[in-house]
Length: 361
Image (tube, rainbow, N blue to C red; front, side, top):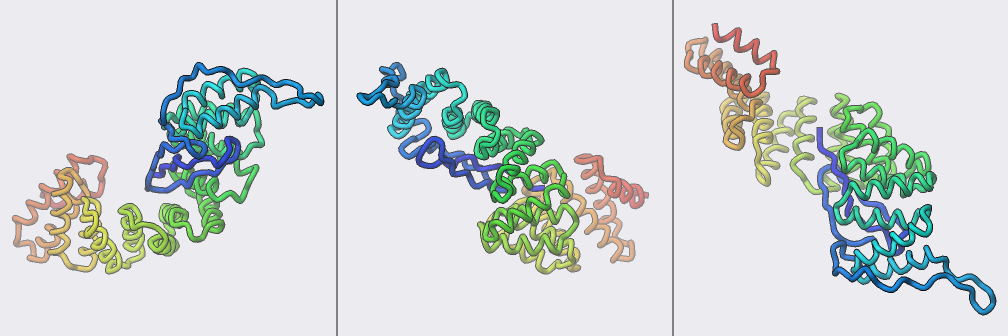
C-alpha cells in the first residue's frame, strides 16, 4: 500500500475568500510557506500588531453606509498579508471575528495562515468553524477534510470529503483525496468509484492514474493496474513507489521479463532493498537462479533485516540443493539457517516455518 500525503502548500487565490485548492499527490508532501494571498511569505517580516485600528463604519454625506467594521478589519488583514505581515493579519482577523463571529471568510483566512505555516491542528479548528457556520461552503468542507487527512484522522477526513462532494460531485481533487483516504483504510471497494471519477475528470493526471492503479492492484485486478501504472509513468516523474507498484503488478500477471526490466530501471536511479528483492524474484521466475541469489544478497547489503530477501536466498539455496540431487548439503543447511533468521525477523510467516520444519530434518 502506498502512502498518501496531501500537498497543503497551494495558496488560495487573490482574495481571502477565493480558494484555489491544492494538488494532492499520492507520494509527496511539499509544505510551502507562501501566503494566502500574493505578497505573503508565511513567516515573513513580523509587524507590530498593536496598530491603530481601522476606522469604524460610518455614514457618508448621503447617509450611505461605509463597510461594516468586521469587513474593514478583513480588508486590513489582506493588506497586511500582501506586505508579509502575518502577525498583523492574524490580529486584524481576530478583531473581525470578535465583531462578527460568523464571518466565514475571516475563519478561512485564519485557517489558511496556519495551514501554510504548517500548524495543521489550528488550521483544522478554523476550517471546522467555517464549515459549521456555512455548511454549504464547499471550500470550507474540503479544506477541513484536507487538514484531517494530513493529521491522519482519516475516517473523519472521509466524512468531510463526502460533505464536500455532496456540494460539488465532479470536483477532481475531492474525488482523488477521498479515494486515497478509503485506500489508506484498505476499503478498496469504496475507493474504486472515486478513483475512477478522478481519472475521468483529469485523464492527464499522473497521481490520479497511480492512485487508480493502486486501488486496482489491492483488489487483485492487476491487468487493469498495469494499464494505469504505465500511463502514470508517461504523466509523472518515475518515483520508486510507482516503479515498484508497476513491477509488482507485472509480476502478478506473469510478465516477469518486463518486471525485471522495470526494476533494473529503478535500481539505476534509486537502489533499495525492496527493489533488489523484487528483482531477485523476477530473475528466479525467469530461471536465472544465480542472478536471483545475487540480487537477494544485494538487498541485504541495503537492509540486513529485510526478511523477504532472506527468504529469497533460502529458496535459491534449496533449489540449488535439489538441483544437485540433494548432494549439496551445505546449500541446504545454509538455506535453513537463512530461513530461521527470517523467522527471527518476522515470526508471522507460516509458509517459511513449514519450509524450516521440512528441510531441517
